Length: 119
Image 1 (spheres, one colour):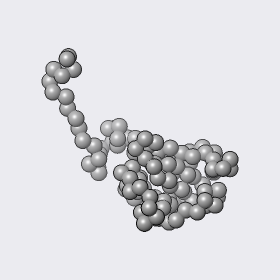
Image 2 (tube, rainbow, N blue to C red):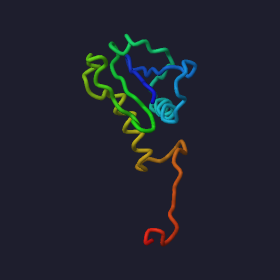
Image 3 (cartoon, helix red, strand yellow):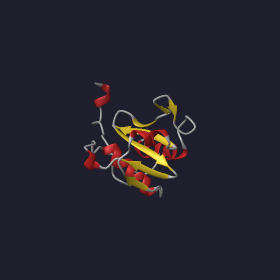
Image 4 (cartoon, rainbow, N blue to C red):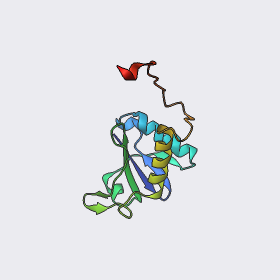
């Protein structure tokens, strides 16, 4: 799982050199942000930064894109998914759900053999 924060319209995530997981979902979010013209900066994120940012969300295979409402009982932004988090969620789920074209070739169609469903 990786963390992203949004501050003043810019998306921040820790750099790979900080021993974070170079995850597939992290990479997908960076690509989608670029597609959507959302600036992305790799930057060490000190704990204190989590208290003052506009949005925070986790990404990963299991969590996909999950907004964070509070950190240490301190509300993040308005306490709900912010506009950039929602925009990235919408784009991610549209592509992975097949309602938008897979412009990054992330999906691999799996076709069952004819008659396999009747077994």
